[in-house]
Image (tube, helix red, strand yellow):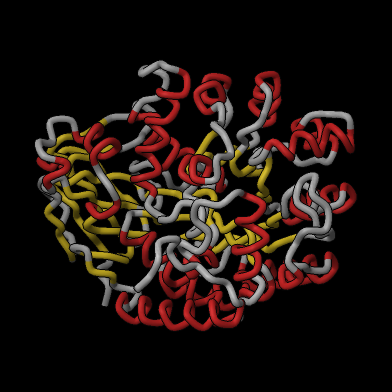
Length: 464
């Protein structure tokens, strides 16, 4: 039986509370699914727990939250490297995903979640689940594995991408009425289920794949259900050109006119907003999921993240997907988010390690609408907690563990993962997934998918 109470002691606790206090030689006491107490080890020694974890030489911190991920793309990791974006979509990603079966969708989701747990991610926003991926099977996997996930059903009624018309692979095309019907069904079946860990959202496709009328309809439906929306916006400069040529306006004005602004919206990437639009995003409390690895790999550009944060725009972090990152490691993503903006604006002070951690924890909780229950280690919040080892070569000496975590660390250093007070990984061993079986399933399904789709992802160098 899993322990009903856990005491984590002797750790270096990043509370992310309102004072951003760090507790040295700290302890955290969990009862059932909730953080019951947090403070100095000496002050918490009276708690008698069923399980005691010694966190000496470890960071204890809130679980990481990935606010833009593609579960289905774990299975096609490395399928489209070093190619331009349109070719990336048309020749590789869409073709592969357009040949998915529901079993492929489940296997890919399990592979992705296994990597997430191993690298410290406890919550995520899956941005677009196609009908062919099997929403129901993916939701069942989330329930069984124990992570916290917002699952967004794809919504679309056109086949374009930004200002490129009719370019979508046939296997990726869906009917609007069928999309909406399935979202309703999955919302009824899964929203709020799995001890509250599953949310069901609307995952709007990019500009060019959704008509103005459908944008407005989805915004109305989401708010009637009191659920949330996500979509790619401003990832490519073509988005800017699309709204200017077709609507004579900019991205945020288009979003406002189609009822897409608000705290219940997560815009992925958000690279190509004009400076004047940041105030609109801030005032509407619209969320931006910053995806630095993906943006750099696909040469999409540099989001104005420091300016967004200064303007009060809520910003979180996302790993994106297997072909565009190519990992689901949020600690690596924190590092890149803290580094690239320094170089881009020639200012080493423009982003800090602390800001990167905030985006990966509290920022993600805000984006998911769950910041009242997760994102910081304070009494009364749900126990989503990770332990990160500070004894590896790359993080020694740990004179400043915050710096080491962001600038020296990686997900490989994550030791223990707890969600809702339940252990999902302990001492680097996955407890809710058979890691070897997950990997074996992925290899088999990926091989059959490549054969079925006819996509060649061989290295560019000759193979002998």
